[in-house]
Length: 104
Image (cartoon, rainbow, N blue to C red; front, side, top):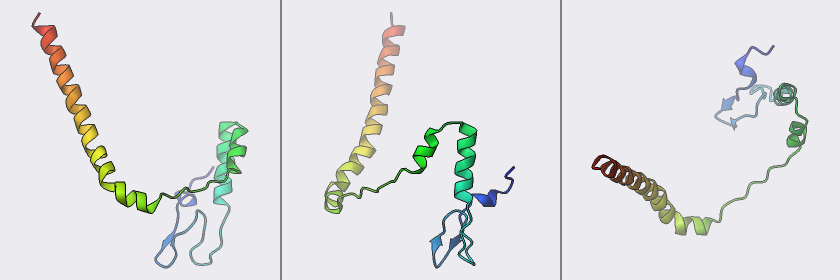
C-alpha cells in the first residue's frame, strides 16, 4: 500500500529547478521511487511488454530554428483560422439541412 502522494511529486528549487522524482533536495540523494512505480504498473497490468518499454531510449528531435521563425506566422494563422472556418461551415451545412428538412 502506497499512501503518500509525496512519492510521486517532484521537488522544485530555485537553484536546480525541478528535481527528478524521488530526489531529496537537501542531500541530493535519489530514492528508487521511479523504479517502484514502474514495477507497480507492470504488476497491475500483467503485461511483459512494459518491461521492453522501460529500456526504450527517447531521443528529442529538435526543430530547425530558421524554418520555425520563417513559418511561424503561417502556422499560427492556420491554427487560428481553420478551426473557426470548420465550425462555421458545419453550422451553415446544418442550417441548410434543417431548412431543407422542415420546408418540405
